[in-house]
Image 1 (tube, rainbow, N blue to C red):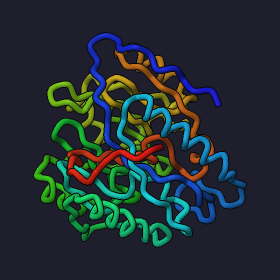
Image 2: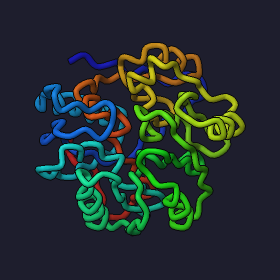
Image 3: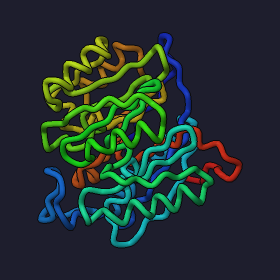
Image 4: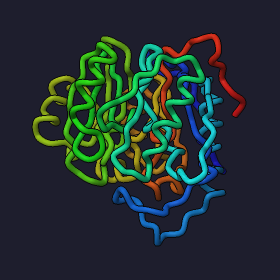
Length: 293
């Protein structure tokens, strides 16, 4: 499998390796349809999904990320999409409460892992799908709703984290989570930078994004459909879909280094790079150590 070479730093962008949680897709399959990308009639190749996922994990290792793994649970084919398992900020994990019963058991599974690692765990009382709909930019949480997470969870996240929470309504069902329509490129305070697909949001949300991030990268329909915005950035390297070619060019123009990976098999389940990646912010307790990939 061809992997994109990781280039040297460019301009004044700064790479800060992340600490992330991932789940090997050994039970991946599409046996139900809860988003427009899923079709149980289309065959899936679990071995290919595992190989593509491993290439993503290897890419993170090459970037110096600390990668933790949660054991997959048989019968939970979407557990590979670790971003949905919760939202971790400053060593506190806010748990997921899934909208669809097929994914319901994932919430407790991830909560048990958080507890086992010494994180402070706060159980959600409102429907939310973790980092799928909560993205941290500086000290502001951009929070999606409209398809999966209930907007009532936004107030709960604000209470749990003490951070500003900005609600954004998603209006296109194929971009059912915020992380499919918006990517955080630089989260540092005073240097916040994002990319997004304008048509995925209602008018009020789009106006709020324009006001807050006037220098944002606006991504094409084609690159969004390739899940280019379902990306992970360390502030310099942006790990994203290999097929999002125009987005890669936009990233280079802004001083980033795009790192393309192929997760086309997992896209059959409606997931990409960010879906497979839960950031563990402030998870520096002594009993948390990166695992072998």
